[in-house]
Each structure stands twice: as C-alpha cells, then as structure tokens.
Length: 168
Image (cartoon, rainbow, N blue to C red; front, top):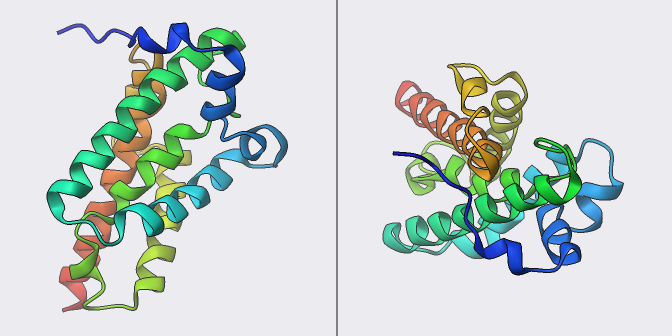
C-alpha cells in the first residue's frame, strides 16, 4: 500500500494552509513551537474530547489527524522545507491520543496530574523519538510529519496506563 498525500489542500490558498498548519502566530512567532503546539493540543483535548464517548473520541481524532496530514504535507510544499519546525498542527492533533482512556487514569491520580504527565511524556517522546519513532518521519509528505507524533502520543498513552497499573 502506497501512502499518497491528500490532494484537497492543493486548492486552498497558501495563507490558509500555512496559517492552519502553524496554528497562526503560535508556530510562527513563539520559541519552541512544538511545545506550544502540544500545549494547544492539551487545550484541544480539554475542550473537544473531555466529554466524548469512545466512538466520538476516535472519530474526532481520526478526522483531525487526516486534516493534519493534508495540511502539514501541503505546508511543507508551500514553505519549501521538510517538516518545518513552525508546522505544529501535527503536535496539536496528536495530543489527545495521549489521553485515550483518561477516565481510568483519573481513578488513580487527579486529572491535572494525568494531563501534566501526558504533556511531559509526549514532549519527551516527540523530541527523543525512541522505539523507532524516528523512522516514521521518512514516510512521504504529511504522513511523515504527523505519524511520528501519533506514535509519540500512543507511546505516552501506553506509559501512562502502565504507570496506572503499577500504581494500583
């Protein structure tokens, strides 16, 4: 199966593509844009995912990630660089995956501890890229931009649930 870049973003104005992929001024003007994008992703989780059921959570996450693949890949083309640091829609949309099953995590720790631990672990895994996560960046276009963040988020989720099991 060959992964191809979605074509729909090609028809959008550059200002929109780059503006959304960088979360506007967040990615373009702040130091450590990936950290700010992840922090914005925590807000995204809190506002949109916190009250969802499993099916709704997964559907919203999948739609957000597909949009991120399209826009991040097209932003690479428009900016003329591979995985530009200013493009942070990938961190933003991957962040809620850290908290899959968050209700069971909140049974052993206050939710603010869960959110803070998830944020910290995600940033660590996103920067260090252990477990072969770095290889995922070699996928073409937006897939490579987004999938390493998805893997970092899922690794974070596994570690959080592992800690929950050990805590009990």
